[in-house]
Amino acid sequence: MAVILVVVFPLVFYTLLLLRDGQQSRDVIFNFKSPFFYLLVFLGVGLVTTFFSQMQYNSGHYLVLLTSLAVIFWVGSVVFRNFSKIKIIALAIFFTGLAASLISLFLFVKDHAERTAGLLQNANALGSYLLFAAPLGLILTLDEENKKLKGVMMLGTVIILLGFVLTFSLTAWVSFVIPLAIIIGYYWKSLFTKKNILIFLGVLIILLVATVGVRYLNSRDFKQAVQLHKTISSFHLNYSFEQRWNFINSALDIFMKNPIAGTGLATFQQVYPRHAFSVLEQPRYAHNYYLQTAAETGIAGFLALMGFIISLLVVVYRATKKFWTDDSRRPYLLGLALGLLGSCFHSLFDFGWQFPAVFLLFWISGGIFMGQKSVAETEKISEEKPTRSIIKIISKLTLVIVSLFILVRGLTLFLSQSYEDRAELKKIEGDLAATSEFYSLAVKLDPAPKKQRAYAQALFQQGAADKDRLPELSAQAEKIFQNISKYNPGDYFSFYEAGKMYFMLKEYSQAEAAYQRAIELDPIFHPDFYYDLAFLYYSQDKYELVIDTLQPVIDRYKDVSVSSNPYLPNQLAWQNFLVGQAYQQRGNIEQARNHWQESLRLMPGFQLAWDELNKLGQ
Image (cartoon, rainbow, N blue to C red; front, top):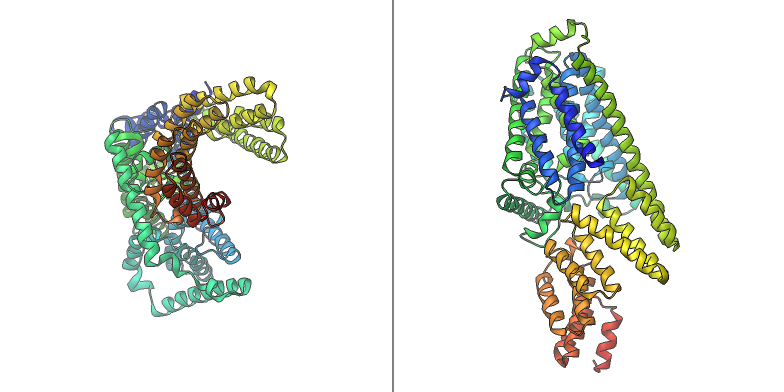
């Protein structure tokens, strides 16, 4: 029942808002040029796919997020028809971008990272976020006539651009080219004077030198202070391009194999391993929002999304064109329009929209332009007195209810995280009973698969420590794993953890089935899955199966860069060691020696391998 409320309630609310009066109803249902129509279809498709998703929990949460943002989009289209409000929101976007840049520069100076990431903790996400503030700042600076305000705006814009440049996000840079070209094309003759360019570049260079200088003073290492070019070196660029190309090809492959219903919202990470074209990295996102949507929601979801984006950009173009001659409105509308355009382009090859902080700017900006569709409608609404129609009253009451609902949900998530943190602390202290109790409370408030897995592990560990309660607690843990597999059948970690539990209980057939299911869902990115299955075979004296299980994995990862998985050398060392043990049991000492030597090459301090070789006199 709770899942239905979480998923359905926001969607019903959004529909009520859109159908608040007759005209809006006709716009949504009959006007196929309206972005509202495509957005409603997109959310409807997302709702349907959520119930058939391979990770229903993730899909449900993401659908709620999208619907909440859609509500913001609708509210923006109603509230931001008065231009004074638009001006305030535009300035808020600029100053929040400035704040984000200042914070990111401060952290960049302190931690000596190669790229600025700020509180978003991801350089590409920060670059995507600043795509809204950067063009807006440039235009407001160039249009400002007051010299003092112009100087303030210029300084703020330079700081934003400095933070943007130091993200070293090539995709964000490329996405900024189109907005920048439009700005230069329009303002070149009138405002891009030699003096302005020299001042702008001078301030930018001074701030950049100051930033590098402070980094040097903190680290006393000049090379570290200036090693910013590494992020855009040919090696990194080629590696990044190869990664994205693999992700995009895999997303296309997922879509081609699931063209009707997709795999469910927010399932790319779980589905990707079965469609990966390389073992370089397992991503959370496809780095192409449009293709990822196609993979997750099928053809209907993809067409609805594209219909929404295209129709919204048409509205943006028409609204900007309509007020082009209005010097008081044009700078703000043009700045917001270029932010939207850059963001839509950026989503072709990066994942900015998967960050709520970035997507929120998109929905607010889009809502502003929806409110500017008609001058006559704007003037009429500004002169009208608010009516007390039943539908409007219901909408306002529903808005309050949804706001309270979201607030309560936020509090439950916060409390759940608090209980999870306390459970982790008790685990470190060795208090297994308290660990299980706190995980139980965390799961009741937020039954995420990750938390359920941790709860099941805690129960089994408690049972292992208390033999009298082992049957009872292991049965509870088994029930939790079964519940996860029922509602989130794509969660390969749950099958893996269940396999480890069955192995400890000496229920080998069930352990084997669980391990094999985990490998089936993720056949490429977690070598430990194979190792534990092979160790299960080894414990049953099935040495041939040990070799057959691990040798393909060893061969697959032989030439893979450890930068994609820093634990890989140790994992492969253990796998080679176990294969060596299997060969030794079969009497093939030479093969055993080769694999133990490979273990030492991968992990020089591997004592078990040294011991086995010493027994052979090596």
